[in-house]
Image 1 (cartoon, rainbow, N blue to C red):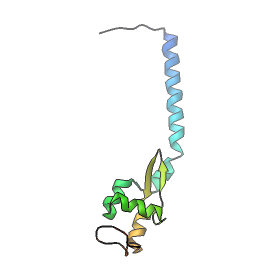
Image 2: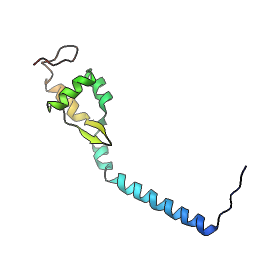
Image 3: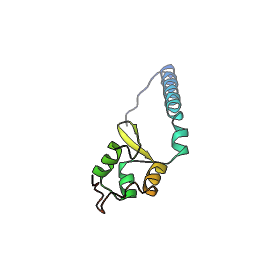
Image 4: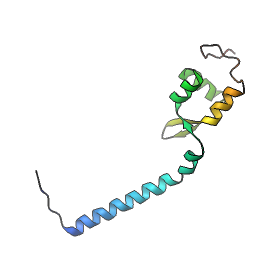
Length: 103
């Protein structure tokens, strides 16, 4: 085992910097907390499973504006309520059992 000795002032400085970093992280994520608590958000895979569709069909729904989404860190998220509304509204009546849209 290797032992490294540092001055107490250096250790205290590192502790303070870590506390500041933790506070910054908490503040940055805190503004998103109400958004994610108020609504359940689903990723691409969860939506495809819930709707029994392929990723390509999901892309078509997004492109046509049938399913709104939000992008966070290069990943798409969908409100469960939007997915449920799309399913209930019968918007998918023009699909086949394979999930392909007929134009």
